[in-house]
Length: 353
Image (cartoon, rainbow, N blue to C red; front, side):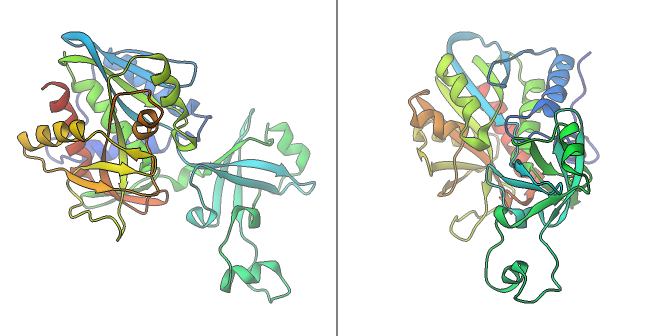
């Protein structure tokens, strides 16, 4: 039986909040995405949508179109920024390094989960005591120096043998403790870690439910390992013909990017990896305009997506990036539900144009 739409009539954003919350609470550090994979595969089975998982970890749903001579893909990466274990000291203190664009000051001191091969271990991401003088190395972080991964550690109060028994080793992923990840609602905004890119995954799940017999073949791709170089999307687009690719993403808000509204979707003209296809951007913007949605155009610097990296490497002919404005990207992110829903409505209309 197919599930009802998660968008509620009495509160148009309640369903979005619930679904994004379910996704956020599924850990998915790059390359260790099994927890989110199980959720997505079960959801797609319940929606009775054709789907598969490839060797790179991408989950690909296929919506057959009226005309199979053209194929488009829409991606939403399912992995999140994290850290990974570099070493374990004889005293059991765990040293970690970033995986993707993570910084220790984003997480702050607090509970983190170490996803061991045999069980998950909780620990405290620790920066050292503040009641110290200049004789202690921690003093400089109060006054002079940015805090880096080399300066912090995870304290589990377990010894090295106990950690090894749980399967904690170099390469083990570290993520924010699950109880710290639950989203918070600020009126019509959602605030949470890992809206990048769990909110986009929610859009793609809704699209999988709503899209019926599009004009051309549509592949909805829950892509793997985007945060470490769009590895999943690169694998897919190298092996399967995709004529046009649209990446669903957050759009960073900053003084350098003139984003006028939190409620309108964004289209990226250029990012740190190159130009997007302006004809495809115009198609998407015109489609949105026809259903009463005004997209905002933006040029980004420290940013990349599945689409820009695939197009840069010649894997697709046309690429675009559709997003929703987001505060505190790669941190405790805040986004407006209207822009998230605007992305869904725009893509549904574009695929059915």
